[in-house]
Every structure is written in C-alpha cells, then in structure tokens.
Amino acid sequence: MNPAHPIEHAVVIGASGGIGRALVEALAARPDVESVTALSRTPARFDDPKVTTGRIDLLDGSTIAAAAAACVVRPPRWVICAAGVLHDGDLQPEKSLRELDAGRLARVLAVNTIGPALVIKHFAPLLPHQGRSVIAALSARVGSISDNRLGGWYAYRASKAALNQVIRTVAIELARSRREALVVGLHPGTVDTGLSAPFRGNVTPGKLFAPEFAAGRLVEVLDGLSPDASGRCFAWDGSEVPA
Ligand SMILES: NC(=O)c1ccc[n+]([C@@H]2O[C@H](COP(=O)([O-])OP(=O)(O)OC[C@H]3O[C@@H](n4cnc5c(N)ncnc54)[C@H](OP(=O)(O)O)[C@@H]3O)[C@@H](O)[C@H]2O)c1
Picture 1 (tube, rainbow, N blue to C red):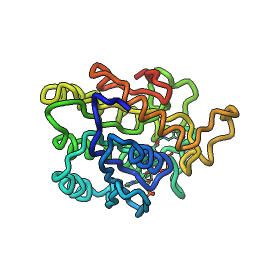
Picture 2: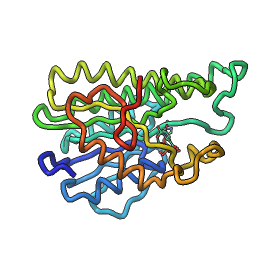
Picture 3: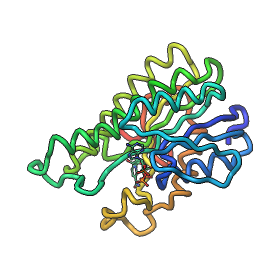
C-alpha cells in the first residue's frame, strides 16, 4: 500500500476469472480502498460489502460504455482489465502457421486487444485530473516481440503485442491531461487458472503461482511504479517485460 496515494475507488474487469477475482479480493482487503466495482461477463459473487458487481462483455462495446457511465458517480482511481482468452472450445493456440484461421484470430484480437482498448477509451476520462491514477491491463510475456524464441501461439502473441502498443499510445495521450496517470501492461507469471490449465507441462515446480499470490504481487508492483513507467509492461516481480 502507498499511504501517499490512497486508491479509494477501483474497478476490475474480468472479475469472474482466476486473476480478476483475486485482484478484487486483494483490493477490497486494503484499508485505503472504499469500494471495488467488479465487472464480468459471467456473473461473479463476492462476500465483501465493499464490492459491487456489474456486467461487461468485451465483445459488446455498448456494455463497456454503459459500465463506465455507471461509474461516473464514484470515479475510480485504479482500473484493471484482467479479462482475456487463450483457448475456448474449438479456439486453441496455434502450434504452426497452417493452423491459422481468420475467424479464430479475429476472436482472440477482439477479446484481448480491442476489448481492453475500448475499456481504456471509456474509463480513462473518468480518472481524476489531479493525483496518481492507474489503468492496467493483463498482458503476457509472450506478447513481447524481442523475447519470442519459441514461436507458435500466433493469435495470442499478436493480441498481447498489439495491446502493449495500445497501452504505449494511450500513455502518451493521457500524460497531456493527467501528469500522474499510469497506463501499464502486466505479466502475472504462470498462474493456476482455467486459462493456463492445459499448458502447464513445462512449468518449473514452484513457478505456477496461486491467483492470490499473483494478484498480491501485481498490486504491489502497481503501487510502486513512478509516472515514467507509463506505457510499459511489467511482470509480477517488478521487472520490465521488453517490447
Ligand atoms: N493464467 C496465466 O498463467 C496468465 C499468464 C499470462 C497472462 N495472463 C492474462 O491474465 C488475464 C486473466 O487470465 P486468467 O488466468 O485469470 O484466466 P481466466 O481464469 O480464464 O479468466 C479470464 C477472464 O476473462 C473473461 N473474459 C473472456 N472473454 C470475455 C469477454 N468477451 N468479455 C468479458 N470478459 C471476458 C472471463 O470471463 P467469463 O468468466 O465470462 O468467461 C474471465 O473473467 C488474461 O488477460 C490472460 O491473458 C494469464
């Protein structure tokens, strides 16, 4: 927690997911947080009275606009988008070029890039003009172009690389109106959720994080970043993920 910069009101998108739920709970547990708006496509339930739930579908821009409009009465200082897709039924990450499919590529980019971009479009204007504020989106290390040595996962990699570029571009624009605002991507490590479940074969023992651990580390990282971090992507341990 950073006592100089109380969060007061926070919004988490993707609150039905493993990391999203843990982020809601980590934020609500903090004394400097008065309320958390937990938005998700599938309804999510939270026992903490600080948490209010609502609906959002990243594939339907009108739900994003409506969710942001509902936050005008209690503008957030932190907005975290923890929604994303890697696999879903017939949608599976590509092992090779011959598995590329236009429809599946479009679906992954719609959820992982266009959705968070629209979230930022609608929620950034709510951030206070004075004082520290944060917009973060869950990205992934595999979105790093310079770090790509394994190949594969075309759609997911491209969607996160494009998300990182959106974040960089927003950071430049937002700095003009809100000098202390931060817009960053986050890599949570490999986390024990439905998203990673089929792909954990090569994870070193001890490197598969519980969602609560990852969420706690990500919140700590966000607390510690200075304004010059805006536009960049950071991992759970505070290290920068190269572009
Ligand atoms: N787990 C990892 O190891 C790992 C590693 C690197 C990055 N990440 C990133 O971390 C983020 C969270 O992933 P997770 O591990 O917590 O996965 P998860 O448990 O599968 O959660 C994914 C979340 O995304 C939501 N979502 C998917 N499509 C949506 C849509 N159209 N509209 C609104 N919400 C939608 C899901 O909502 P529903 O409940 O309605 O499906 C769910 O809340 C993702 O961006 C992922 O790429 C995860």
